[in-house]
Image (tube, rainbow, N blue to C red; front, side):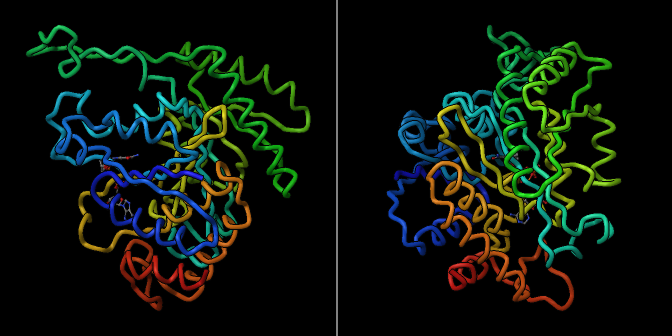
Length: 360
Ligand code: NAD
């Protein structure tokens, strides 16, 4: 099994090193190859997603990704910015389904900004469509000129678009996931989030999801407008089971959901294509504010590696071993700074990774 390891920028390098350490501690045989991506790739090779990196990612069974981006690249023209690397990987690999579980570890109930009874036992899954929507529609503005003549542009726009097949396939993924979760004891409900009261794209989204839902009579379906969904997520998050939504709304709601669980440093994610090949990365970014300080939480990346074993490498037992080890480390009271509270022990990125290895 071949894993393309793409640490990227900022804390990406630090947290991916810990996930690799954990993977190496398993008795599975992997071939891991590392490549540059993001700002570091731009600096070394002039492009955030060099050809070699893309080829490696395409040929691998799975991609373990850190994060890309730094404020120092904000003045670059958009196609050369580090964030284009992740968009390029998603598009080129056809990674249309993004799974972001928001699961509250019992030990971290106190780290959430919500009251403990609202989030104790929280286990929801946000499924975000990843290759359509406004991020891939036609943009026009000062930094994306096709003819190089936009100085002093007074207007910019991006086009929100979805096609029926794009909505159908993500809806099938969501209902399928709800069925699997139901078999494991969840309530069996999909909540589709849109803005159908205002946007045509959303009306199509709603109609198609409704239609696909008729093929899954065992799964309940409801719809929420995105503003209401954002509110309900902090009012009563446990009412949800599976949330399915588009690229833009999913980006925002999944970050919101991450704070429910205590820290964005705890949340893994998986992005899958139709062949089951996937890219696995923490839900957070490159955190330039703490990069190089050795304090980043590596658990989201370590848990992403567990998702990789389960989703793309067909190693569910190894995935579970990692998840159990993470739980044990938390139960021992070890915390990185982002989840630290009085009475627990503050550890560095490397110490947290080593503790997970020790538990394994
Ligand atoms: P961010 O997720 O990098 O950071 C937000 C906040 O959370 C920061 O205060 C940071 O210190 C903290 N944080 C994030 N991960 C953490 C961890 N593992 N442990 C402890 N604290 C953590 O978001 P941002 O600051 O908005 O963006 C920074 C850069 O990352 C930008 O260039 C942005 O474009 C990029 N970004 C990349 C991705 C990606 O690579 N997929 C995703 C989001 C943002």
